[in-house]
Image (tube, rainbow, N blue to C red; front, side, top):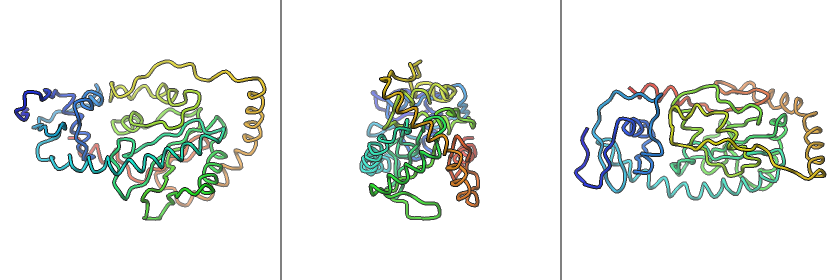
Length: 285
């Protein structure tokens, strides 16, 4: 394996090379810190011997130098989109049932194209997912946020609420290098009662792919509340859960004809029309 002849260049081992190959699929060269952070784990197997080059603080596969400028341009583009996401998070935090809002997808890596949308994940209180979803859409539209809609090509700077989870159903069923990275790269912008940490705890398997990407500790999930606040919140949740089944049936009936490979259940809704997992598997070897 060859490297450019700079004394300060870090020697790149097999695990780092595997990581570079993976991130190259997304035109994403890595810094030294990122080589460590995204070091591949035992479930990431690479048998390819490639030449790694280094320039301007980035490591990349030979012939892929152009990705440096592409990444820097995407970082600039991502700044405005992240601010929009954070503003949306501030608004959504006012909804009691919203337990977590996280930036996902390319934007979470600060690698969004100028015409791309803003992917967000939302975790709701147990038994309130579909009622929460209705409230979220109503509130965001009322405040004036632009939301991406199915079938509409123009997605620039629009919020794409494509992952919804009930806090009781956080375990990822599809486990592979891509889904592990997607979880590890989530940037929480609203995190009530350590819900983000709970998400990581429920999906510790991601460390088999990316062992240094996140620190997973045992957290005390939940906070002490005054008796009055406790009573108000739990009475409200009781009322909401009474209408939850109705909310699910109404929304499911609306989207049923549009469902292809999306996952829609009473406790989760995941909308990913393009299967990156298959694309990555096809390019990996």
